[in-house]
Length: 214
Image 1: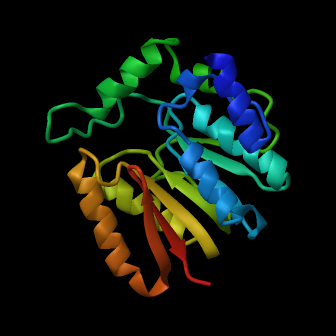
Image 2 (image 1 turned 135 degrees about the vertical axis):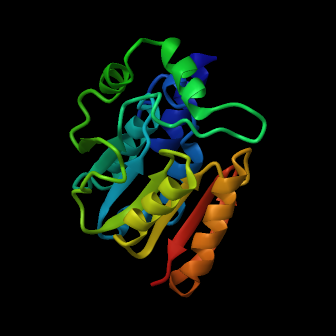
């Protein structure tokens, strides 16, 4: 089954996937949006806020390496699984989820991430609180936000990405329409506040994609 899944991924995207366990989110819908919208042809780099084990990061690097080798994938994470203590209405907290995922494959998130993304020439890692670090890019073609899940972080991370997003570029936000209702509410607020700048909004599973007008 593993070999079949890997072969299908390779045929679809043109490069080998990282181990399945390293991509907790499932980045295939993200890769599909980048391909379908031809975002790799736009000016600007790729930003990822929140990396967990690095499988999604490796997939972004692989696709950009194939489609637009000059683009950088800028990955931002504090690499502290206990940092996000956001709780859902049904009782689970993000820190516990992260700790569980990491404990299955190692004891140190950064070490696992470095192992999964080793050798990626287009990767730039920014370690730190996304509310405090400097993003080393002036223009972004695509961003994916799945960092701290508190409303103020969802808002701040979006504004960081959106302010750099080029015309036609896209920002994806994870956990939209899921158990974290405040994330969905915050995304609705942001869409309303930036309505005159937005070309369209759509969803793939629990990811909301927002495209800037041209």
